[in-house]
Length: 254
Ligand code: SF4
Ligand code: FES
Image (cartoon, rainbow, N blue to C red; front, top):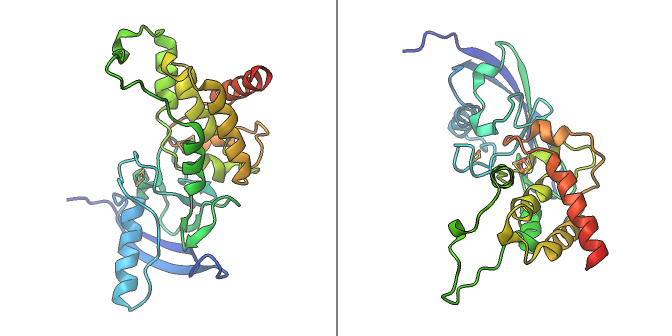
């Protein structure tokens, strides 16, 4: 049994009935919160209390609660996914906070991420970017080459794998003063640009994905690097440089 002292905290939570409504920060006092609770478990407890009082629970996104789906998306004390590094909101624990602390919880803020309700934003813009080019075509004629039979330089395989760990959470957008999706797009471009399987559609991929990001209203990259710091998967901005090289080369040769 844990002997750790419970935390008394004040929550300032963004409440907004729907996309059209004007939102505001509401205040909730939480008593004796276990430091071992995850941040989302703490919100579950808040919601149980609200429901028991006949109030509306706070709407927030979550699914796997294991750091792999990218659904959880809270701006906590001014940082996407809160104060931890390389963790998603669902992996954040209350032990990261102090007794007596006031915690501000807001939705990810970006023009391309409209608020749906409370802390839930619409991130389907990222899906549309993915649809614009984040795939490869595979020959299914019966003559398909076994992927494992194609030699790939270890360094490239590692970098492609690192890029493929992007979970599409959108924290990079929320962290960026320009609300740029460059880290996300560059991860999706890089995971294929580094592999032979990605070469067939390489030019169309980078041109179409960058074009779609602009059409969705994401801003330009100005190399501040905030995205890399807040990314829960540690995606490197080296991928943005690679995407820019791919884009320039495709623009000149297509
Ligand atoms: S690059 Fe990082 S912060 Fe951006 S969507 Fe992917 S995992 Fe999330
Ligand atoms: S709920 Fe899936 S990554 Fe957090």
